Amino acid sequence: MSLRIYVAICTHNRYDLLRGAIASVVPHLVDGRRMLLVVDNSYDPEAAAAFAREYEALPGIAFCYESVAGISNARNAALARCADDDVVAFLDDDARPRAGWLDALEAAFSESLPPPDAVGGPVEPQWPGAKPAWIHDEALSYLSVVDLGRERRMLDGREWLAGTNIAFRVGPIRALGGFDTRLGRIGPSALLSNEDIDAQQRLRAAGGRVLYEPAATVTHVIDPERLTQAWFRRRVAWQAISNFTVDPARVEADAARAGQGIGNFLKALPPGERTLAALAADVPTSSLFRLQLRANYLLQCSLLAGSGVPAVAVAPGTSEPGG
Image (cartoon, rainbow, N blue to C red; front, top):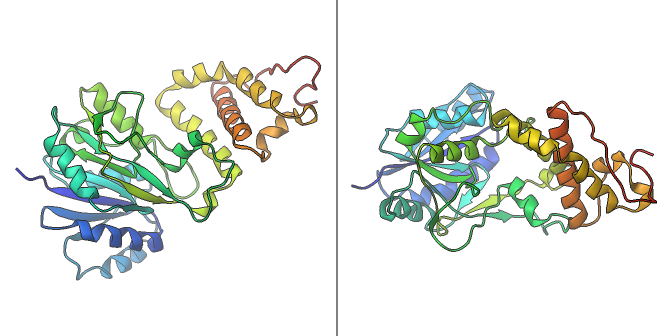
């Protein structure tokens, strides 16, 4: 039996980006089995309705307004519009599917044995200019960049798919309660995350399977405002909060390594710069930035665990942090 697939774009007051996302999806809607559902999570229902009217004459597109803020609420609103036998493919408003994207997702669900409960693929960055030299490979995950190779395969519990390019069989994820509304972005300010990773982890815990399909590729339009070191430092702090929301024990374990992690960063600096203020200062190289992000994440873990600012060891003969 052919799958009925909904492409769900969840959006929050980014209509210029949303227009591009819709235009990129329309060529994939080849017949009545494939539909586009736009879940508008903006604060202004009148603006949302006005935008939806622009597409009234275009077949295969439906709009849903979700008044409760939060990407998890928007994703759950999309699930509510689907039947258990449907597949819902989530795409962010700043993602653009490549040719063959939806065909590849459908093939992965139909051909793979044992059948998967979730399928996703690579996310390639579309930089607004040259990639900043200080962004190291590990930091790309904070921009939802995913590259798990060129082989279709089931993923293990250490691997994850990005929420900007992931499709679910509706029945299994709905049976688990959908997306956790404590997690995920809420408006433009709070950088909560993990709603997509949490859904995958709960599927696996229930015996479900998550599959990587390399042919189902999207590009992610990178917002220039995210290409600052300050944004990444803020992002890792919120990552600690997201992790704490789901798994406090994990954060407490990370907190125990905070002194060492901060010390590793400070030791890599010239002696005169080895103060805690360096945690909030821009650094010149990707290797230093990697250590700084790790140190900031661990510091936030230590604060969340109630341990405060940890004692930091530095090499003999160097200035003490904070001195």
